[in-house]
Length: 359
Figure 1 (tube, helix red, strand yellow):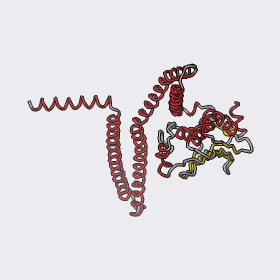
Figure 2 (cartoon, rainbow, N blue to C red):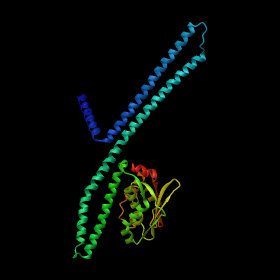
Figure 3 (tube, helix red, strand yellow):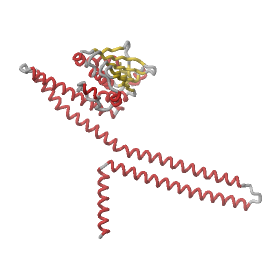
Figure 4 (cartoon, helix red, strand yellow):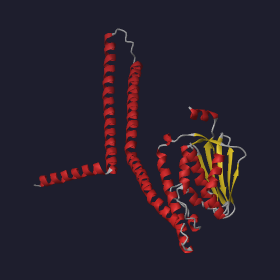
């Protein structure tokens, strides 16, 4: 009776474990790694035991061979030092073989353990990106309908000033939501960088195009954006990605600047790369916030207290990812209440790059 009860409990535990193993990838990963470790230890023990056995047989065989030569030879030529040297050679050979085999197995099992350990993270990331992409696409249609209906309502002549102000405020919020969705979709498409076409792009002219798009924002805040560049500067990259880098960094500077101006300057550094500097005279970023400023959805307390609620917290994150896509780098220097400077360094366009794009 007790044995039957114990067997049923054991079978139930086995069934629960099998179900959890199939459905929970964390449990599956833990189990796979434990099994790998057990197999690795068993293989090391097997190799070590086998090597000891082989070394023992080789030593015994060598000693027997030496003894036979001494007994059958009238003038023994094998001394004790020669025997010890031969045994030392056998030991060195066996140790080398064991170390090599264990090292190879350790590398293989290390790779497999890392693969299994990171698989849940990869699956979760891919699922998250797919979910974000699907949600963003689904939200676009109703938002477009709401925005269109609101704009049509604003065309009515009988609308009161209070209602007009309310609808205009709604349009600003809709634009903010649309901007967040566009940023999410942009961040979601960065998983396939090999599909992004590259070419030589004049970033000075591209920055002027971005500034024109931001004219409504600068006019409303009565700010001026200055472009400092004597010559065109070409960057080897994707024109749409570069435009978004400039859009996100320049608009971020404008958004957090209440008075003064924003300066966009271009130059070539000693490594032959193009440095793009976006400097503002805004509220600045504290040292605590500066550490996390490139993290998704992060906005410092200063930004919130100053009422800049139009930021999605993704602008600089996307700009940073796009800069990495171009094998560049981004750095941020800031002083609270004095301003911020964002420096984007990108590979310069060359005639060789232009020739490759034409092939």
